[in-house]
Every structure is written in structure tokens, then in C-alpha cells.
Length: 95
Image 1 (cartoon, rainbow, N blue to C red):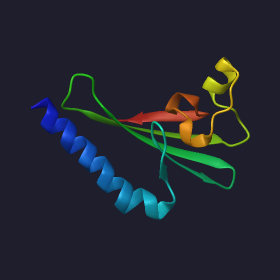
Image 2: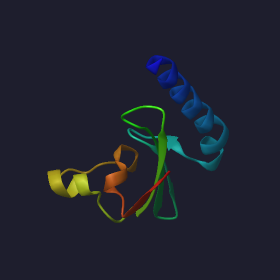
Image 3: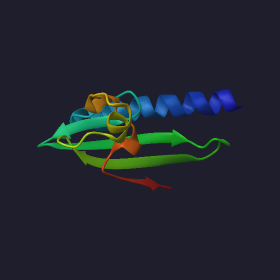
Image 4: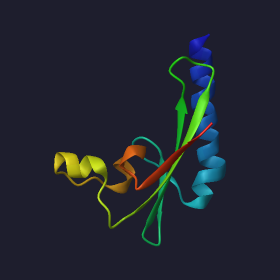
């Protein structure tokens, strides 16, 4: 049952990428869908609940002049496509 839900979740994310995000210039980053527009980084992450049956949508905004928290913490440069939602200047979870 959990495998069926995971397959459905992955298939749904793939359809959203092709139909909604790609036309809006989003790419599939390492951990979320991201795009860079006029110095801003926009991000959307779909996250399955640890206990199953629920899904969350995390959204975020940052600026390309700001390093991500991981970059600061580890002293490395990350491309915007490698960022995590926690690296962004502002983020929120939609439930």
C-alpha cells in the first residue's frame, strides 16, 4: 500500500513539473523545483508526510545575492538548484 502511494506521489510530481512548472521556467533541483527570475530564487517542494497519507507543499523565496544557510555553515558555494528549502530567506509550509 505504501509503495502504491509513493508511486502515485512521484507520478503526480512529474505531471506537475511538465504541465505547470516547466512552462513557468522552473527546473527540478536537487531537493525541490526552483527558478531564478530577476535576482530572485523561487522554490516549491512537495513533501510526503513521514507517517503517510498526507502531503505538504513548502514554498520559498530568496535572492541570488544571499548565500544559503548550508553554504555559510559548510563554507561551500551551492548553485541555486542545489539549495534546500531551509537555505532560503523566507519559506512556509502550506497544509
